Length: 148
Image 1 (cartoon, rainbow, N blue to C red):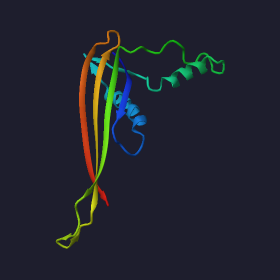
Image 2: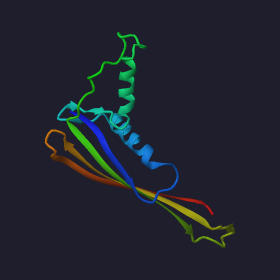
Image 3: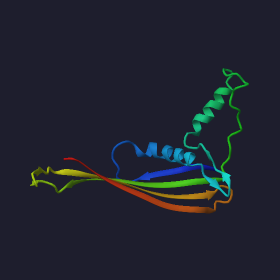
Image 4: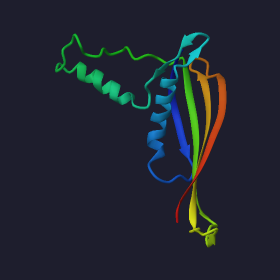
């Protein structure tokens, strides 16, 4: 089985960094690390997000500037049997914590609670038939107290 992550849309009110740029690469790397197997067959993950780099290298190999014995051949990029389509909803929230005053000799200053959540909605589609063969939704939320 050969899969390609072909779409990862990111929506939401996130802050800090450009999630739209790093999340597709992060997800692709994570599924490569996972060593997926389906019916005992190892899943091969194909590059699609940065396929222009592969094509550029192949074109460079044909330019005459690269030893033909070591140049990447043209026409050998693998086709995908299945496509992974993802949507990520990323949201962040910065809430003032209602601390203040003192308690038991401790000075309780006000603080902020930073909360972030991510929900991934994905599907695997058969590239030959267009049939959706698997779907999944997962999410995670995390909070931390920061200085005011």
